[in-house]
Length: 166
Image 1 (tube, rainbow, N blue to C red):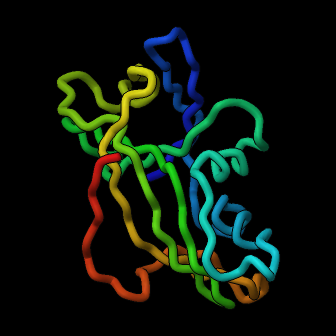
Image 2 (cartoon, rainbow, N blue to C red; image 1 turned 135 degrees about the vertical axis):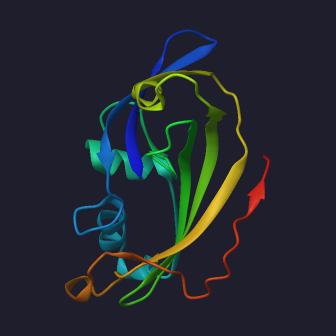
């Protein structure tokens, strides 16, 4: 599940992250479809976009926002949240293979209500979390009339994730 968060810089040390709403990356009105359908034909093929650019497509470019991923939104004991930092893609006529790159923001057991914690949380400013990636595909490309913009398995589903540090 993806969420839209607004980031408030409070002081030199910390940031307050406030939940705004759920976001669907796929679908005809999703930020992936909006970005891919706006690519000039000369740029179709390999491309990359920062996560904040996709967030700006959801918010009309106003404010400091970020897209945050929760792999298990219903978990009542563990909170894991990752910021979408970059999307790299290779767009064809009817399909786009994607690599979603994330930075881990928070991963810990919570004794109090995790759903309440996710509404507003504080992070140390400029703290860098572990980077991880996920390969997916979307059924959409340069032929936007035939595109359904649904997330699907990548062409080579190896079942691996790349983990690293910056």
